Structure formats: structure tokens, C-alpha cells
Image (cartoon, rainbow, N blue to C red; front, side, top):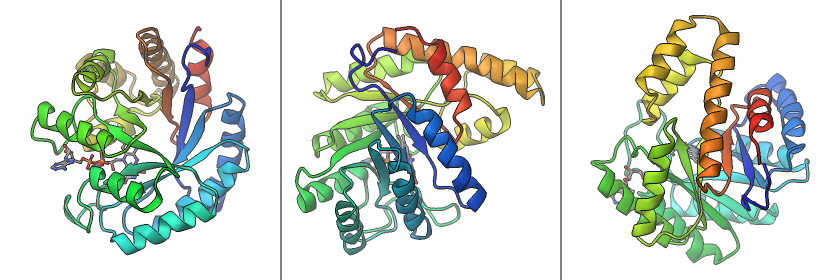
Length: 282
Ligand code: FAD
């Protein structure tokens, strides 16, 4: 892929590992993916405290690669004082970009609206009030609609409000239908959103996990893809090969159709992502 054609290029998302072995493995994954000169790496964040230090520690480790590393930050279950402190900590650490989210409470702890800031647009406003233009801010977008949204229309209005609050780019939830992305971008543009909307890409390596995750986050796996993946049973090689071809085609279509880059949900694995990138032609 040529980064001239796609000026935002590629980015890779990690989650903070919770074991020493996971941390060691991630160093190798980071180095393998750094060979593709990403625009940035990002590290996810869990609501409710315990994983906040893990996010920062992982960000520090990933930054040793020399590439920009962006922490995700969520406001659910947090108050302004705690967020202010975290922003100050990130600034002191030299961090210049954030992915700003409402987040989800851990299961069993209720839905949205918990905390002083109720939605991501309020978090974006707060970050801008507190830190001006210091951080480049990315937010989440949902081409197939956020699972709690009443309808596509309201979700899109909420998305546009979040962008207008001061976000610089958006990264989408993953999806397997390129049309849903193009349709979303078209409608966001009609609402005056001009910022880049980067598609989030989920490589397919494990059907059971993918199905569980997709049901939880509202990402649609088209029936024919489910059927095909189900037919492979435990044959992980067949699942990987089918997934690689499918996701490569999706990425190619997105880039050919004008997507400004690709953000990979790596699940802390390098190989499936590298194979897809190797297949994409410029
Ligand atoms: P919001 O934009 O606040 O939207 C949440 C819901 O509220 C939507 O249904 C929306 O339509 C509605 N809404 C928004 N604003 C308003 C308003 N002003 N009034 C009324 N309704 C409104 N989760 C994590 O816990 N950690 C992570 O690191 C993480 N990283 C992510 C990265 C990406 C790229 C994506 C796509 C998702 C990520 N998530 C993460 C998941 C995300 O936190 C959940 O999807 C969460 O439920 C919504 O967060 P949000 O920032 O999109 O919320």
C-alpha cells in the first residue's frame, strides 16, 4: 500500500496484556508490525481503574519502537478530577494523541450515563477545555450503528456532534460489508463531517471468538460468512485462509473506494495482519 495514496496510512491497535508472557510476546508483535511504518499504534483502555496503569505501561513499552503510540481513554465511571489527572499524566509522558471514548462498564455494572461525562462528545469537549489543541483526538464511529442506538439517524447525529466537539479523526467499529462503510461516510459528509473516517479492520482467525465479540459490539457477520466459517469446524488453518482472503478483499475495496487508511484490531497478533497487508496492492 502506498502511503502517498492513503496519507493517513495504517495503524495497529493492541490491548494491554495481563501476564508477563503476554507482555513479552507483545514486544515481538510490536517489532514485526513496526516494520510496516504505521502512522501510530494504539492501546485500549478498560473502564473502572485497574487497567488504566496497564494501558500507560503498555503505551510506554510500545513507544520504545519509536512510533507514535496513542492511549484510548474512556469517561464512563470516571469523574472530571480523575480524567484531569490522567490527561496531565499523559501530557507529562509526552503523549500527543488520544482515542476518546465513552466506554462500556464491565458486564453486570449497568449501562451508559454513569460518571460526570455521559457521552464521548462530552469527553472530547472536556479534553479540549482542559488541554486546548495539545492532543490529536480520535473517536469511534459505527457504520452499522452502535448497539444501544435507537436508530441509524440518531446515531449519526450523535457521531456528528462528537466530531464537531473537536475530534480530528474517527476510527470505525469493524464490519465486513464495505457498503456499510461507504454509506456511513457519505451520510456523515452530508452532515458536515469533513475529518477522515478510518475503517477499523478485524482479521478473522477464530470463529467462536469473533461471533461472541461481534454479538456484543453490534458488528454484523453476514450470514454467508457465518455459514462458511461454521463449516470449517475446528480447522483453524481453513478459517485463517478464508479470513485472509475475505479481509484482504475488504481492505482492497475500501482503499480503492477512497478510505483514508486502515486501522487494524490486531488482538496482539502480527501474522494475520501482515499477511493481509502483503496481499494488498497499491
Ligand atoms: P458515544 O459516542 O458516547 O456513543 C454511545 C451511545 O450513546 C451511542 O448509541 C450514541 O448514539 C449515543 N449517544 C452519543 N452521544 C449522545 C448524546 N449526546 N445524547 C444522547 N445519546 C448519545 N471500549 C473500551 O472500553 N475501551 C477501549 O479502549 C475501546 N476502544 C474502542 C476503539 C474503537 C475504534 C471503537 C470503535 C470502539 C472502542 N471501544 C472501546 C468500545 C466503545 O467504548 C463502546 O462501543 C461504547 O459503548 C461506546 O463508546 P463511544 O465512545 O462510541 O460512545
